[in-house]
Structures are given as structure tokens and as C-alpha cells.
Image (cartoon, rainbow, N blue to C red; front, side, top):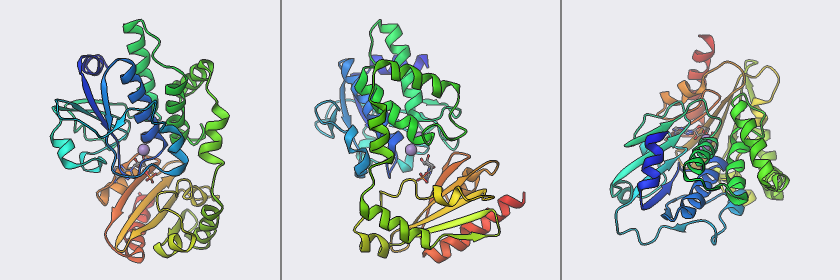
Length: 322
Ligand code: AMP
Ligand code: MN
Ligand code: MN
């Protein structure tokens, strides 16, 4: 952590990015860290090519968060948050190659340490949790209370996104400790929960209905669910607002592995994988060039939904036989 903190304190300009299809942990850690770096008088830009899902827009308060991509003509370090591999970074190639160094802060087991400085804690529940403890250390060194209610709210968003509001096994003592300290700072945790989990549009729920109609069991411990282009069109819902739909498949009794197949475009299938107790879905996702965590992983397959389902199911069955 010392090397990372030196790098953050000694740098002048930072461009911050995360993985494509951003989630609460990517946006929460980006906004939390950016606000903190701005308090430390750093020049900070956010570079994200994918849109922020509507349920996370509340974090991107323009007056508080750093500028989106702007005048980055001088030297800068690129900070990659919550992203396991270089090719999944959600910013333009020239922004990646133009950086004087890459700082990789993450918690994916599949992280291949692509940065010049790597701070990868595979035990951490979320990148937001890592950022929280980094900022605490900086506060101590600088004798400055950096973590205010806005920063805390961003990091809390990442924490509860990745732990399923403390439901998953990745919520450990450090996560509960962080939550306890953050709540004492004085955040509106109920409104964050409402924004994240209780603010679905009516059309998204109708889309969920269509998705649930495709729910199938394969044996008694594998469940799949599908989302097609046609469904997104019918309900006029963005294909990035599908967070949580896979949980309905995972949460069925006896199911160990759940897979969601999302047709983002023709022959562009985004696969999400979840396991409940023992299976390692990261290993399965890596077979298709993806990755993630033991209990949650993903990959993309350039084929039809039918073929992608066939390919993934055969790997899932192999994994469960082992
Ligand atoms: P998702 O199913 O998209 O919510 O992803 C589940 C977890 O796996 C998240 O932590 C993702 O960041 C990670 N993940 C998804 N796709 C990939 C990929 N292609 N490479 C590495 N990690 C991934
Ligand atoms: Mn993420
Ligand atoms: Mn994460």
C-alpha cells in the first residue's frame, strides 16, 4: 500500500477509468476516489466510454465529481479501478497508451496485474472497500479527514452492490467495519438502498417478466435465463440495466450455478455466471476469455444465444462433475 499511496500523493494529474458495463462498484469507486483526489488538490478526469446505468446516475453529481475527459494534454497516470484486465478497460486506446503509468486497484481473482503499480486484494469484497482503506491511510498520513459524506456514500454504494447488501460470502469483517465507520460519518444509507434496489422502472419489471419466462433448469443444480434484443426493444429498456436479474436463477433451491445470456447485439452475447456455495465460475468464464470472481464472473461470446448456451452449459457441467 505504501508504494500506491506515494504514487497517488506524488502525482499531479490522474485519469480514472474502470471496466466496461460499469456497475455500482466501478462507479462508486471512481466517484469516491475522484472526490478524494480533488480534495488533495489533484487534477482529475474520468474517462468512461460506456453510459452510467440510470440507477447510478445519482453518484455522478457534476459539481462534486471530477471533470469528464477534458484537457489531458500534460502528463497523467491512468487509474484503473475494479477491472481485472487491460482489454476490458472502458476508455479510448490513446488514453491508455498516453498514460505515463497505470495504477491498477482491484479485487478480481482473475486480475493479471497489468499496471505499473498494482494493488490487487482478492480478499476484498469490492474495489470500493479497498479505496476506503487507502483513503483512511492517506487521511492518517496527511492528518486530514478526507472521507466526507459524499465520498462515503459513493464507496458505500460500491460495497453494497458487490456484497448484495451484505448477503454474499465476500462480505467480511473489513466490509462490516467499513459500513459501521461510514454510517457514523453520516450518510443517507436508506436512500442509497432505494436508488440501487428499489427504484426499478415499470418497463424493467416487465422485461424481468419476459426473462423469467425463459428460466430453465438443466438437471437440478444449473439454471439459465435469457434476454434477447427483441425483449429490450419491446420494453424500450437499455441493455445495461439488467443488474440483479441473474439472481432469480441463482436463488432457486438446489441451484449451484446460474448463467444469464444477454444478447447485446447480433452475435454478441454477454454471459453472466453466479455460483452459490462451492463452484468456481471464474474458471468457467476464463475458458471463454472472461473472468471475475469465484462466485460471480462473466465473459462475452461472439455467437447466437443458442450456441453460446450450448458451449457454456457444457463447461458448467464439466466443472460440476469435478
Ligand atoms: P457481471 O455478470 O457482468 O455482473 O460480472 C460479474 C463479475 O465478473 C464482475 O465482478 C465483473 O467485473 C466480472 N467480469 C465480468 N466479465 C468479465 C470479463 N470479461 N473479464 C473479467 N471479469 C469479468
Ligand atoms: Mn464491477
Ligand atoms: Mn467489484
